[in-house]
Each structure stands twice: as C-alpha cells, then as structure tokens.
Image 1 (cartoon, rainbow over the protein chains, first blue to last red):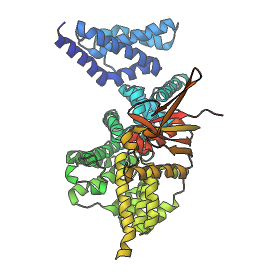
Image 2 (image 1 turned 180 degrees about the vertical axis):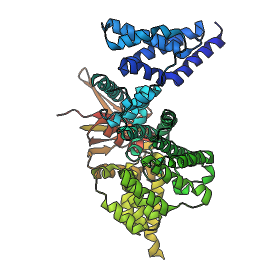
Image 3 (image 1 turned 180 degrees about the horizontal axis):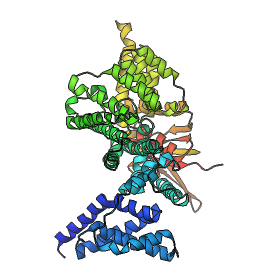
Length: 435
Length: 112
C-alpha cells in the first residue's frame, strides 16, 4: 500500500462524507423512518470506508458503496431486533439488487429538512437537528455554536429524533396550503444556524443584521458556511416553485451580511460598527450577487420577511456605491417587516433607523412602547436606548442604558467599543458646561 | 434553578491594577444581572497572594500560604444566579468579562 493511495483514499472518504452525507442519510432515514438508526448505520459505513478504502482502493461509486454497507447495517440491526416483517425492512430488501450500480438516488433532503423543522419539533432544536442530520455535524460542534453543553445538546438531539420516530412524523413534502409556513420554518432554522450566538438568534432582524451583536466571532463564523450551503440547497431543491422567493431572499440576506464580514473588525481585533466600517473592505461581488438574486425574487411577486430583511441589508450596503445610507427607506422597510413578521429585533432596529433618519423623538417613543420581559437581558435594546437618549441629549440616562448594554454583551470586542462610547457620552454630558 | 458561576483567570487579569475598563466591565456585568433580577449573591476575591490553605491530617493542622492549586488560572470570584436553565446560566457566563480571557465554571447549586 503506497502512502499516496492511502491519503487519496482517506480524502475520498472525507469528500464522500462531506458531499453525500445529507443525501445518503436523507434516503436511508426516508426508507427507514428512523433518523437515529439511519445515522448509526451511515456512521459505521463511513468508518468501514476509512479502514478499507486505503487498502482496497476507492470504489468507483463511493456513494453506492456507502449506501450498500449502511443498508446492510440497518438490516442487521433489524434482524437483531426481529423486525423481519416490518415495511421498512421490505423496502430495504426490495432495493437490494441495485446495490452495485450507481443508484439514481432521489434527493430526499428536502423531506428531511421539512421533518427537522416540523411544527411538532421544538423550534429551539431545529437548527441543531438540521446541522446534524443534513451536514453530519456532531453534537459537540453544534453545542459550541449554540452555547449549550455538549451533553445537553446530544440529549436534545436524541429526544428530537425519538419524537420523529415515535410520533411517526411524515417524511413527505407538506401539502400546498402548508408550504409557505413550513418552508419559513426551514429557512428560519437555517438563518438561526447562520446567526448562532443567542443574541443573534433572538434578533434575526437586529440593527445592521448580524453585525450588531452577534456573539463572538469564532462561534458565529463556524457555521456561516454551513448555513449558506443549506440555503443554497433549499433553493436548488425548489426549481420553479414560487415559494423559492423566500429561500433566495435568505441567501441574499446572508450574502449581504457576508459581504461586510472583512470590515467588522480592525486589524487589532477592535469592533467596528456598521456606520464606521470602511466600505472599501466590503466584498462587492457578494453584494452584486445578493442584489441580483433579490431582483429575481421580485419576479415571483411573493414578498416575505427574508426578502425584506435582505432588502434592508441591501440598503445598508448601497453605501458602498452611493456613499450614504438611505435611512428613510430603511425605516419603511422595517415597518413592512414588522407588519409581516413582528419581532423584538425588528422593533428595536426600526427605532434605531428612525433615529438615524433624523427623528430621535419618534425613536425614543418607539423604544418606550416596547414592554417585554425579554428586554431585561436583550442587549441590542439597551444599546439602542443609549444611542437614542444620547441623540436626545439625555446623557445621564444614556450612560445608564449604555452600562446595561456593556453588562449584557458577550463579545469582548463589543464591550471595549461600548466602553469607549460611554466615555464619549460622559464627555458629551460635560461638553455644554464647558461651552 | 440556582447556578454558581465561578470565574477563573490569570494573575494579570485579577490584579487590582487591571485597568479601569476591566473593573468597569465587571461593575456593568454585575449591575446588568441585578437589573435582570437573576443575581442572588456574589463576591470578587483578593489576589492569589492573599490565599491561605488549611488541611487537618491525622489530627494535625497543615496551614500553608498560597492557593489550593498552583495553576495559571485562579478563582477570582463567583456569582450565584437564579435562572430557568443551564442554557440561561451559560448565557450569563458568556457575558462575563472573564469569558474572553479566562474560564467560567458553571455548576448547579445543591438544593438545601
């Protein structure tokens, strides 16, 4: 065995795992109606691939090989559990003869995504479930991103899969009436994966999008690529479907946020708020890609929250071309968004947009009207309140809100930035006396 | 549920002259917890040099200067919070100034 063969075989196994995991798992889970059992079978097939491919060479169709081995695992498990006559076993046995050819594997990933975001599954666990069953991420990785303990995350995922099996959730695409709502749940879970970090999870519409308070970078960055992959996947699985407009809206939204990512931190790691970002660092190709996607969604004439959020980020990013931010337009977009899909994040961001558009009094009134128990630990609210109070020259009260925002941030860079801002508020307070 | 958040940090981070920003960040953090109604109790501790350890072995006292474990990161203080779940406790732990520089240990408090 040459080391070259071994290396390429391991790489082939890794590539097959990455590219085919979701597709293979979706098909196995669809046939078997049991996500956990399908995962175990596929995991052991991948393990076998890693040990046999380096010595015996990579099979011509790695996917078919993996599928055959995984199926055999499932059948063995069924034999152990004496499930001979179950319809699942029959389904697996029927497909058996085709095992050595490349199977024309129907893509069941959309069905799997719909199951993961089923109304019967707790919304908080949906993003994790998708990341695990479609992309094969392990509970530990997901727990890091979602700021929970690996043991608790593993338990939650196990419970969700038990529910799918025991409640007999249908592995089917929803009926036409349910489509928009069910698809929205899928997209919401994907966006939650993108914006992971609990602050962003609570405020998918917050201020400048993910930029404002997205938790710490490493945590958030880890899953951005995965979320983009999932959103692209949903788009590709919905050719010609008008509901695709929202999926494309989500892709556009994430691309607009991605475009700004190089400008979010200074060379020294310093936090740079949206308004102070150097637009020369924004990635213009991503912005153009997002904008053309957004224009094409308009043709479907199916407006939705993700398209609106993408339009808001598009407006922010238009500063790259025009040199200024169209705040009045952003205010209107937030009003539409709140009308369509009210959220605390959107309400707070709306108030900030009003302030930036020149109406600090209205901004203050909007913030004062918010009355939710969640405000007590909702950092973007306190940051917005500090900003609006400072604009209204209530420097003392602004300082108090700013303190609260500082105490609630989980990002060291944001904390430092806000402390510097606080000093400016205090100087602002001293200013008129000196003048 | 009550959880204790224990903050472990390096000597440099715990020193009294750690700079106004670090002290102010802790003040803001404690006050945000208080205003959110989750703070039960808590204290910051003086530096590791002030620690004294004691053991009784075979009826004999062993008193030593210095902390229990001579590790790089030392317990600098703690807060007890009353929150709904471990996830909420972890969210508060992540907000502490210590999360970025040291380690926060989160443990449920025994019900008495």
